[in-house]
Image 1 (cartoon, rainbow, N blue to C red):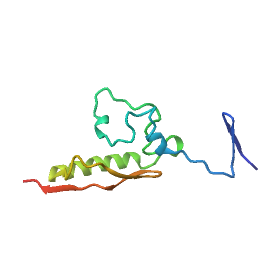
Image 2: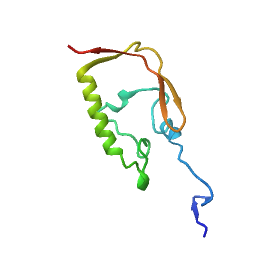
Image 3: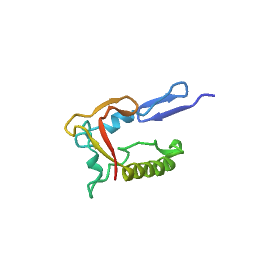
Image 4: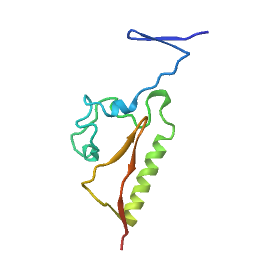
Length: 118
């Protein structure tokens, strides 16, 4: 038995693997202002709402990451614990962020200063 799927003018058969290029979506100028710039403040603007399907951190649809909600709860708890116990600051706020991108974008070097709070 052979499965064929046709999308637009393209036909896919079950002998090939297709992947969504998430990195290309996350760096698409149609979705993001200055997509190659590390700017976490873009998420803090009151009127900011990412365009539909422009941010795919945990996948989509039936194959979405089963641990997504647990991961978010764990991250919030960890960050709150760290910032309650420590002062964390960048060593050089003007230094460009060094990243590596393939399927996921990762920071390769981030120098921080960590001090125990009083």
